[in-house]
Image (cartoon, rainbow, N blue to C red):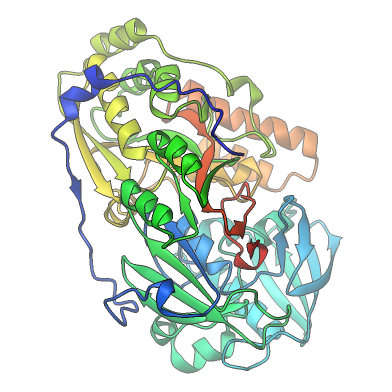
Length: 525
């Protein structure tokens, strides 16, 4: 866990980065109409409350639990509300709002619910909340999680504390679905009475911590909920600060202003370990760096150009010089530990600069500018990795325009598909089944990102979705990865990341492979 004895492998990449020395970050902050109740963060030193402060690289996007698909938001909302089942720290399923569950047949699951759960306004949690939540996300195509929950045909209320999920055909991954990020239940009567816009400004959940305030692009503050069914919450307040600049996160940790920081820059590891009162923690995860490419727009609609991207990226140089060893070369976005991973695409190095140059030269590409959208502050060394990848693509003969944005501005542009050519993103998988990651390439989900379309692929995905036989289903998931990453070169995955955290020595902290922070599982020493 502690990095004090790690031998530095930090090699300079000044030569290939120099081309992009003038790039700057844009900190656009679009109005969202969501809670902004004050302008100053209250320091922990100003109160005697028991406070946990976590600094992430960006702000949450919403309190609409089913209308996001990013880990920054999920790390906050998992403390605010609960799902029927969740994964414990060992990644095993445990009932939470459910007392028990049973698969009745291939398309029917029954859940017995707890009868002692209260919403943050004091009203009781019932089967009505479950039906409202999951039928809403299953039918509302505007919600970002609809694409994965749309397998639900109906939620039947057997009684006030029993529900049955009916799926559209056999569905082998129900527990994965109901325990993933975005599966937490929302309050039916509260939303039906007040409307969704009122809820977004005055959200309630059923978790150990309730909403106190959200200062956009600054901090989300949750406070203890005394009527929590799981017993007395450990912390009086939990604060999630948005600090895009990595050096600022480090300074806040060293000063004692925060307890946990994410994505610690490699050049700060030894400093944090050497400082009295702080330490480094290197955790596992499922996150993999990918270069997303527009499949239907020039010049990345040319297959040889897309192929060249994979061959142009020298992953070993990036891992050793930029990531300080915190990564593994790969050519699939499906990480180890996720069911259906194509092991033949993991641990391989595609780098071949001469082949990349040959592909570009023979492609008919005539030097058109290609935008490369890159985030800053969200993933480990993301902007630095983006700069190096851009330089490598330039060396292969592509005319790259680097566009580095802070996370909040980046994710808005990415979700709108507002990048002309390529984008860098590090996908994770809290579903722990390859069907989740590979779902993105179905024609209904690929827009406006890769914009890939294939009837054969769609039919293959649907067959795997309903396949109750694990062995043949795994083969289908592997074939999908071969199509997307090898045959069609739709995008270029290249490094599976380790996850570095800086932590205060006053707390007990063990990272999770899904990168969520369950505050009640973090304690003082």
